[in-house]
Image 1 (cartoon, rainbow, N blue to C red):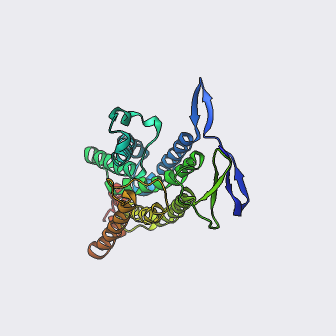
Image 2 (cartoon, rainbow, N blue to C red):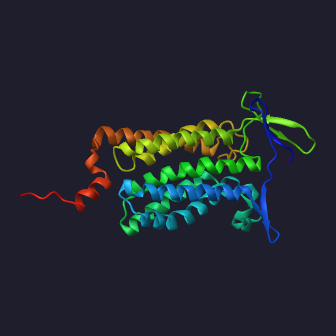
Length: 284
């Protein structure tokens, strides 16, 4: 493969997809970057757990429920909308190492896993989703750089200022929209904003809803620029773009409804109720 260039930024690099080999088995940068994003997300969630009224055990136990379902649903989401690749040999659905995971499927699976964990263990759903949403932004903003090493998840051909040049086997350079970069920066901005806002949140679950709205808004725009979208069963509808737009509108609607109808107060937050229960005011 030839170099990846950003001519207007004076950048030219030629990264290999393979980081190193162990016993003849190639280890790809994509997997390393995804793992790094996951570990940083877990580290952040554990550091912030107390501010949401949670413990580190809550975070770890939640992961045991959420991660397997996230991987399963990410794979199913991809395979359902790329069914032509698996119709003749469905067993290939199990070959996760060949690639083919969809972020939205992973998010859906993670939410289902967290909900099941909270139902079984009687844990607080809202605070866990809040921490999880912040962690997802970390994982997504870092994970997108795996697409950079794979030279994938880019947009259409462009001659704009922020264009990314990919060199083919014949040495020809074509410039594309670096949509992986757009989404990474979008998620970074969202994470910084929600990190600080989370300290002033109005109700449990609000941070997660804001994550859904923010990510959905950005993904609805960015997905329209991509050339590798999953389409809704042979139609011209980009399924992730549709889901992003609908989830964004739905999340905003729920936030507005809670704010106007429920009038949430700070003392209703789980973390404040835990403190009040642990240290009741004594009357003389």
